[in-house]
Amino acid sequence: MTSTKNMTFGSPLRILFSFALPLMVGNVFQQLYTMVDSMIVGQQLGLDSLAAIGNGEWLNWLVLSLVQGFAQGFSIRLAQNFGAGDEKAFRKTYAASLKLALICTVCIMCFAFAALRPILRLLNTPSEIFPITMTYLSVIFAGVPIVMAYNFLASVLRSVGDSKTPLYAMIAASLCNIVLDMLFVIVFQWGVAGAAFATLIGQALSAVICYLSLRKLEIIRAPKEERAFEKGLYGKLLKLAMPFAFQNLIISVGGLVVQFVINGYGVLYIAGFTATNKLYGILEIAAISYGFALTTYVGQNYGANKIKRVNKGVHTGAVTGVVTAAVISAVMLLFGRYIVSAFISGKPEDAAATVDIAYHYLCIMSSFLPVLYILHIYRSSLQGLGDTVMPMVSGAAELVMRIAAIFFLPMLIGTEGLFWAEVFAWAGADVVLVASYYIRIAGIKKIYRDRPCADDN
Image (cartoon, rainbow, N blue to C red; front, top):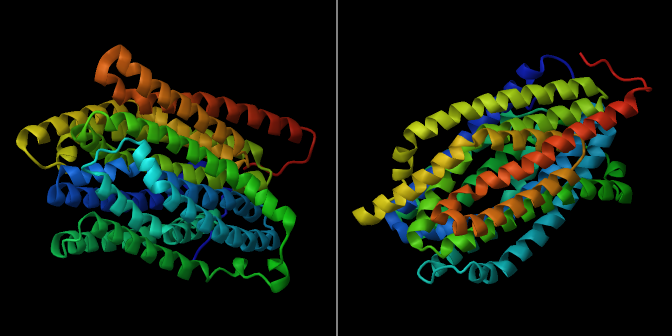
């Protein structure tokens, strides 16, 4: 049976970790099938196919991040309604969010297909991998409704404190994807299209599991009168979600600029960056999980007016995140070369050069991983407070830093500069997010200073 979790009382460390742990496990499985997908493509189809998927990575993430932005933005108000104990408001928000999610799906899908070919040309995609990238992304973009279904349903479940169902859904999706990858790519010889079909079928399975769990919740069953159009509510939801989506959009634009520059260095560099970027998800698994946990935790406690408890949870999350990042960094520095080697095949000299590129990039990112974790902690905390504007501004800071680094550092230190763009982007966002959080929390405390406030235990 679907369970909910009230985060407005109890130990913040225990609550955050118990909520984040299933998400981490789910993300491990998600990254597992992403890695297996890339390994099968790299080993069975060669460096060109691996480079083709990598060439489309940021464009794929741009579309995915728009979906995630709207889904997570809507869930912020759901978490606040749940924390305040206002079931009627929760049901109204859920009904309105569902309608908006359907509209957003159609708009994002139209944008994805309209932008696909022009953006790939703007990226200076090498001719030998252009048609492969087109094939892969065409299949992926056809599945935007599936991606929205999973992300929306999982976000609703997380808003009421259920992080276990998305875990079960992701485990099932991962296992399904791995089996279908081997079947479609190795047995049926469908190439990169087979890998894309396997991904979408796995995500469809995860969406079904989340839906079956969500429909058991009494709190979402709204009478007809509560499902009626309410202009003010739709506006409030879009006010939360639009900056969230736009933040992801401008981060993606920075990534596309980086991809444009990398494409100018040839297929080996593209393949090397692709191999490491497939491990990017592993690096930030815990960061994303802590972020989801904090968005729900902060949203519920802010809705319950427990401001001191909000601050305590954020500090706990920051310390836990930095420690976790240090452990992951150590593992990657020790074993990263062996891991990236599993993605790469081809002529011995080409494979060796690609591994060197991939491992060097991985070492730099791993060494500064705590910077990325601080980004996720404070961005998610601001979003839980209902502030999606400053996280959007932090996305602009990422964009500026990423573009500045990728264009100017190679002029100063050669190709070494290519590897530092991500670290510079994280640092730029951190400056905005940490300062914004403490300014925001100080303002909230001032508002509540002379008002009755809930017990923060």
